Image (tube, rainbow over all chains, first blue to last red; front, side):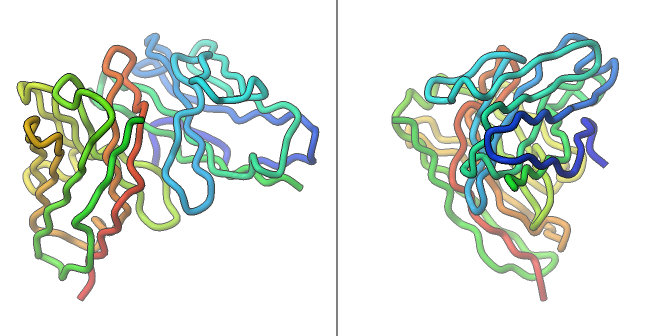
Length: 111
Length: 119
């Protein structure tokens, strides 16, 4: 059972917009700790996609955006492309556990 | 270019030991805190261990505490994970990941090394 909760799967057609939620608690997201997102393409290592809730590392398309409110965060992907098909993980810090924590991951399928 | 290259994975019997290595390049290794993160087959990501740049702070996930030991050699730009008393629940791909400590995230990841615990 992951500390952060994500939907197991989402899907969308090319060109559409999808969102992936990440729900935490008062000891992590709700405590003000930042949320970060990673993209894991099939058979590869995770790659940083969004950091500090809303920031994109250099090279990440602006089709990807992050937001945070209360004890939850979201990753939005607009203009879906076939190459976006991957697993997406949210991550934060938990003050009760004193560890970095992950969501269980969401598999994005581009129809 | 930041590069992290893990090695040392393989097949080991339950109760056995294995030592993973991560060779870093493209940045000043001694200035960065580092982590090990693992991913069981078909599962999500699990943080395993953290070591600060000067080795003053070391942390472990409860699932590996007392069995795994993280270490580093800044002169060799290398990170290590000594894994003892392995069980099948330790079967996973192990990634080394550079830490962006101010915001608690992992900014660079290696390609991973597979550890399989099986008789």
